[in-house]
Length: 353
Image (cartoon, rainbow, N blue to C red):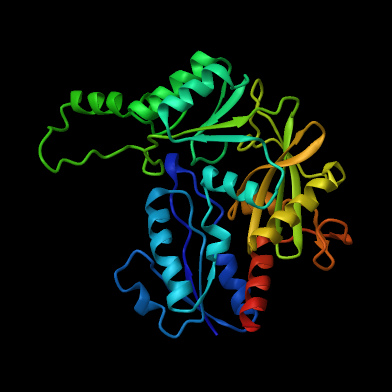
């Protein structure tokens, strides 16, 4: 078989580089006796590039340019060309969208912090004034590494957030770019680098952020959590570790303070990770878990994640069978590249089609 791969070795904002999966995928695929074809999804002939291929693999990120290509291309490749795709639609259509994920959790009965999504300004304002309990967490639908997550402590602060979201919108919370579209526009014009004219385009300095406008998203605050538990499920394997909050902060994602001791990982989170993966039918799923009154809940999920962090796990849990509630789970000692697990699972499914 010929497996097409799009490189994910791209520069990120502020010069950071992710730990690319594509080279590891290619190595594992060739070791299994298959051919790799490198493709470029940004080119007009991408569908012709896929002629003769059985599958396409691409680890796209929340960078706007990549996400808009993936959203338009991958469903066509999967549904209309009939190729196997990683990530497939069940795995990735909810990626980096907290609103979609909240609906999915509720639809499948997955325990999660209570979430309120408002599309009506007046009703959101009234709710903030009369019903909301504080503190409460405000979020934007997109964001990783705790970006676009803010703790709100009063009704007046919540109403100010709602007003900003419905009146002028924002690009990010708690940053230079979070002051709203009008403020950004005024500053841009004052620099003398632009003049208003028909068809003028404003270039944003943060290409991985979207404009957020005419909605507001609130989530129940869960006090007493000094860390979250990240569970990454790939097929019947689960990798887990704890991430501690930043000093003086309630957020753990992106803190870099990680404990890989498997003895400290609550088995309830491992089962919850398997449950989410099975119910949503994902090829790969990373879950961020917290406690609510001593019980595990899922805050967010993502099909992609730091491969380096997963590889640091000293081993993984393996689910025997499909009973994630009470079935046997065994511990498998030894580090494993997540890309190896992804390719093994992907090729197994591809060969059984």
